[in-house]
Length: 157
Image (cartoon, rainbow, N blue to C red; front, side):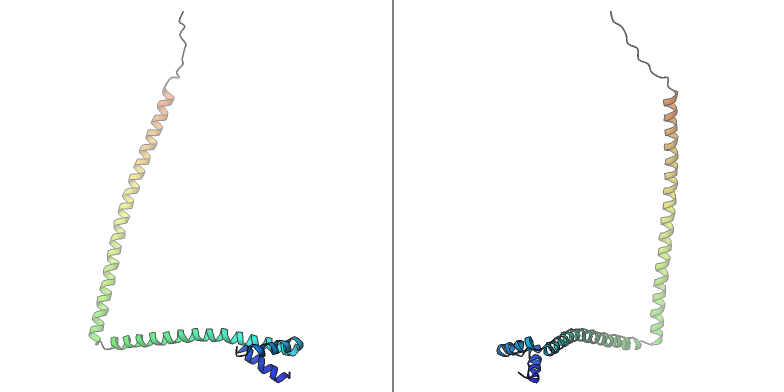
């Protein structure tokens, strides 16, 4: 089998269009020719790389398509926003600012209330700690002030 027809068979095999009979001829030729085996490896690696690349390209194309759709929808929304008159836009901005300031004021009030509650709890815990330590010292003093107890046996005759 000549080299040109073997290369055509390799190309058909890589494209998965080679018949079973021709496959056998191809593998017989590959068994006997080192250059043909190198050509086969190169073609097979090229096909594998192309398959992977085509999957990546398809993925990138989908991303670009979705980005284009999103951009068009966004531009449609922007066109609708630009139709608002200047006083309406300023009014919307004022309402947004008022809402932000009100929310900030509410958060400051909540923070102040929580802080005062925490400080009152802290003072209560300190007073309880003082009471417990005083009681502990008193109990210790009472134990130390009692005379030792001695037990004497009584003799019964």
